[in-house]
Image 1 (cartoon, rainbow, N blue to C red):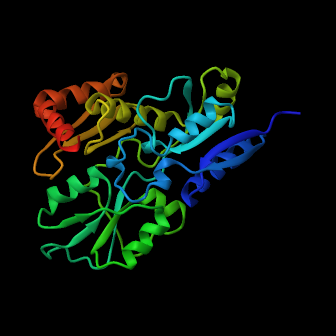
Image 2 (image 1 turned 135 degrees about the vertical axis):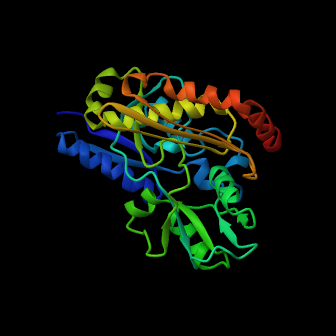
Image 3 (image 1 turned 135 degrees about the horizontal axis):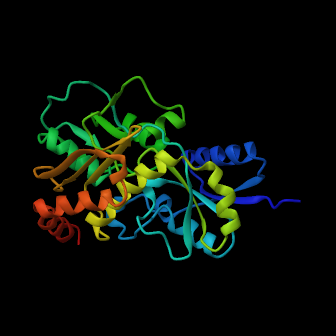
Length: 303
C-alpha cells in the first residue's frame, strides 16, 4: 500500500484552505494524504508588526523544522511568506497555478480626500506604496488572520485596510466594498502557493511535480530573484510582478523608501528567452540607480 503523505500547514483558515487544495489535487492523481496543522511564530506573536520580529520566515520556520525532523512529508505555504533562500536540505517541489496577484482595499468610504485618514496594514510594501499616493494619510498596524483583520477593521474608526485579493477570494470573504488597487505592485510571488519537501526525497519530489504550473513557477522565480538580490536579508518595501505571453516577459519591480517619498522602478518587456537570471539583472539595475543607498537607509531605520 502506498504511504499516506503528511501535509504540514499552519492552522489558520486560509492556510488550511491552501493545504486542502493541495490534498485535493494530490487525490486527483491517486495520492493519499492527511493534514498536520501547526502554529507558527507569525501566528503566535500578534502584538508586533512582522518586520519587528527579526526572524526570516516567521510563517514557515516551524514547518521547516518539522520537515527536516521527518514529522511531515511536505509543507504548503503562501509563496510570498517563504524566504528567498530555503532552509538547507529543503527544495521547492511544486508551485501551483497562481490566483490574483492584486492588493485590495476594504474600505468604509471611497472618499480618500480626508487628511489624516487611517489605513490599516502591517506590510512595509503596502505602507510605502500607499503613502507615495496618499502622503496625507496615516498608516496603522494590523495583525492576525484574514477574519481577525476584517473584524478589527469593522470595530475601529479606520478608513480601510489592505488585503491580498487572493486570500479574501479563497475564503469567500471578498466584500462588495473591496477596491482593487491596480496601481500597487504586489509582493513577489503574491497569489501563488508552494509545496516544499526534503531535497533528499527525490522520489517524493518527482511525485509532487505533477502539481507544478510552469508559468507560475517561472514568474515567481524571477520575482524572488529580484527580491533576494535587493533585500540582502532585510525586510523592505519591495514589489515585483512578472507575467508572460507566448514569447515575451513583462517585469515590474519597485523599491520604495519607508515613507513612500522615494521610489525606484523598472518596467520592461523582453523576449522570453531572456528569462534566466532576469530578476537578478533588474535588481542590479535598481541598485545602480540609487537603490543601494536607499536599501542602506532602510536597513539602518529598521535596525
